Amino acid sequence: MLNLIWLFLLISGILVAALNGRIELVTETLFSGANEGAKMCLDLIGLMALWLGMLEVAKQAGLIRLLARLLRPLTVLLFPEVPPNHPALGAIIMNISANILGLGNAATPFGLKAMEELQKLNPHPERASDAMCTFLATNTSCLTLIPATIIGVRVAAGSRDPTEIVGPTILATGLSMVVVLTVDFFWRTYFRVRYRRLKKC
Image 1 (cartoon, rainbow, N blue to C red):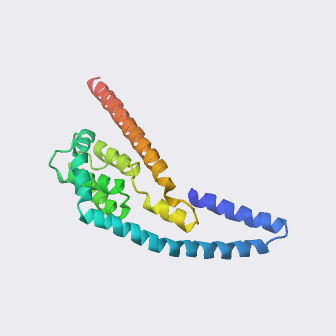
Image 2 (cartoon, helix red, strand yellow):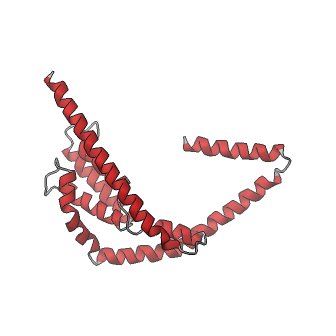
Image 3 (tube, one colour):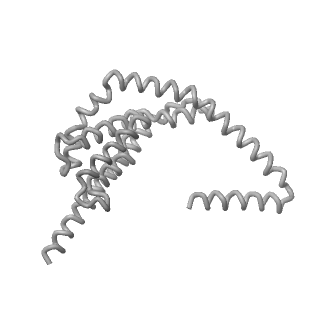
């Protein structure tokens, strides 16, 4: 769908330029846009290397493991069907901890491992279990304390204060995580009660 929207915007822009007799603007815009995109990518390399290096140091120093200990009671509450000492719970905790620190690259392998372990507990392998849906919702809306990528983009775009996004990001991601987990809890409870009623009939 997104590709169709981009295609529509591209074709309509070319048609408007042609109808106004300014088709040369299309070529100029294409080249200038490509140059700016390449320049922004090069600007991001240094900044991302710095942030990821600092976060890797924090990871090696045991910050993720400390967060994992703090998050364990929450994950036990969110995933009651997962046994307390199951490997899936450990991978979920590490994934959430990495996401909170903005370590997307570190969070991805933990997320894949968590899904793999949750699938082993899934009584119906042909469809996602409640725990898998909750984990996906948590991973998508997870609280982020250090939005390194957004800061990098703002620096590359010439922002005077690229770190001013940190506060709103914490607020927005915190709210989104609370809303998503609340909806997930009530939605899952609703369908569980409905399923039991249908089973009795």
